[in-house]
Image (cartoon, rainbow, N blue to C red; front, side, top):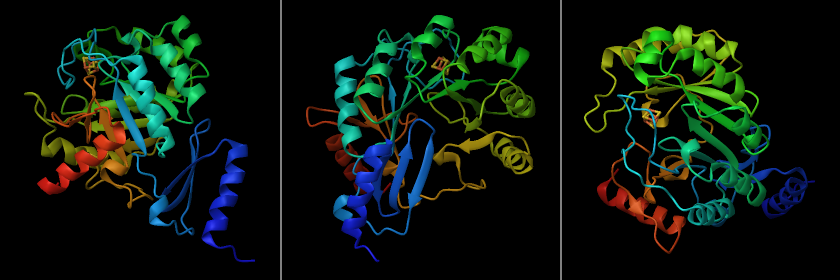
Length: 322
Ligand code: SF4
């Protein structure tokens, strides 16, 4: 029996309601997402009417606070005391959840310094269908915080640039303390390692990947250094060496790279129809919506909510022909 598309979508709704799948509709088809396992399924045989396309970005990142107790030389986060109010964040996330966003990534600054961090993660897991992740330097994750977060986090990203003395010269924290943190992080949820790639950290990638696999990470996110606020970006030679490293990597970790740096890398993107603001957007600690966290300008989120700000940003981008 051949079902019409409307019937197929209704059936999917019935099935997914019972199995905790979240649905997202786009020109690519119907995207099913299970936040507890991270499993994504794309039903690209289903032609979704344009009127049903999800209007929110697939993924949103939010800088909860600009506070951080480290001073990494490559840091792009403004050193200010800006912090987003709890009620405002939860209102935005409820709106994004309704309109098809699949996950939120909390960052900063250092998100574990946000005064209501645990309460916020619990709230999002209990009141929305969003997957919750956060990016951290890891040094505040003691046993108590790990215990409080367990069950309310779906993925953790820990920033590790270099090993041993290189790490310590960048982060000014003992590398052994980081390794102890990673042992606690693995008790919270699946986790990955983020590496800012520059001429200092690239030579240590083999060792970083080995340490990451040994402590139980499942992903290595490569972040070629971006030029921002006087910090130089990655040079062409190092970028070329990074491409060679990626092509020769045979280890167990899933390799990822940010969209802006993906050119020339062997990437797999099944959702090419969902690029730009449909794929990802960032909200900074002042409540300004931006295409990504490196952008210095964006659109303040007003009373009209996040989706209205996204439309304004999209129309500004069209005008500027971005
Ligand atoms: S830990 Fe992150 S937010 Fe803090 S200074 Fe380093 S790069 Fe910036």
